[in-house]
Length: 458
Image (cartoon, rainbow, N blue to C red; front, side, top):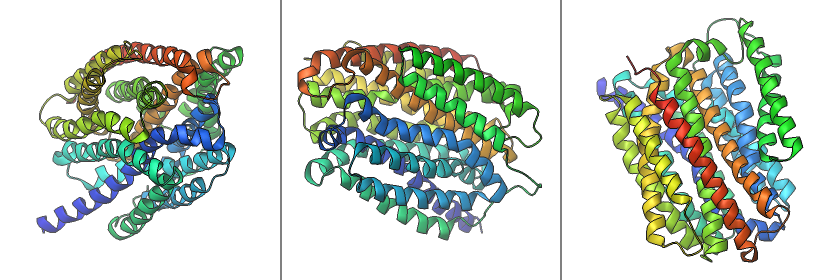
């Protein structure tokens, strides 16, 4: 009986992990394909950044509402529906003939991802024994990092030999396999038994606030960007006050306000991704436009970080079941800070061994931070809040990634705005890269502080 139960949750873990690999695999592969996409679709620097940012913004906006819908109609239904939307949008992206089409289809893909990531960790944690939670979350994190490792190498080779469209078709094929596996192996369609209604007003306020913040950040330092950020902050305050008064809010704001461990851990995740997501994007531009490497060779260098992340996160997930996960996460954030400081000193002639060493340090820090931090978050709430905790963490991750791209786009706007990227603008691009890494390093230092002051898990 025990063997049968173990086999069930291992099969479910495999399906959830494979679904979790879709986005990092495609996202990291696209970083290497961007120069080819820019050339084929005639995109300038800022428009190119929106290929990634539109997806992140869409996913961040819809993730918490989709988690709430999952609690109402069933997490399995929402998860599989999200996979279907992801499949269709990946096909559409593969046939996109203009930058506008690609950005629109990427936004649609973000809706599907929001439905997947608003429910996947909740499904996984609800079916895994609590004493194995850290280990399983570590496996899931390792799969994500392994996908990040494979993505640049695979993306570089596919782009060079098959064209950038093939990346989307590959993602569509994997998602089709996950759809079949989910229908077969996710047996429980968990949902709340209470009579519920969907909070449309709260969802619209949340979407408007997040849109203003993320889009405004991409428009800095111009006046419209500052105005949008102020407006988004005001809407976020109104959203928080409104949600506190609702009996069935789209986001349980009291979970965030009353639970210090949950609050500081999710905030640490937000800062971590804000400080790190733009690394691969900027390094891809650096290695191809400034150093003149092919997508394949650039991928071989960038892959170092993700390989180390995958190896370390497997160990740190299991270790967080026995040691203080808060201490592990804080140490990981500290290593990332030192890695970002090292990237601030990149030049047009920096040695590849130096770059590889910095990427190894960053990978080690990522691996130590992610699994223990997720273990803290999911262990700080009750089973009835798994869906909300999972969606909140995902939203923090994606919002952080969008903010990180906002930092990169702001740096590009200050230096090479409106100019098609090419080796001829390498001096201005180098300035943008240094500005990005400097801002990210400052953010990461703040993350070390927020991670260190939370209460340790009981």
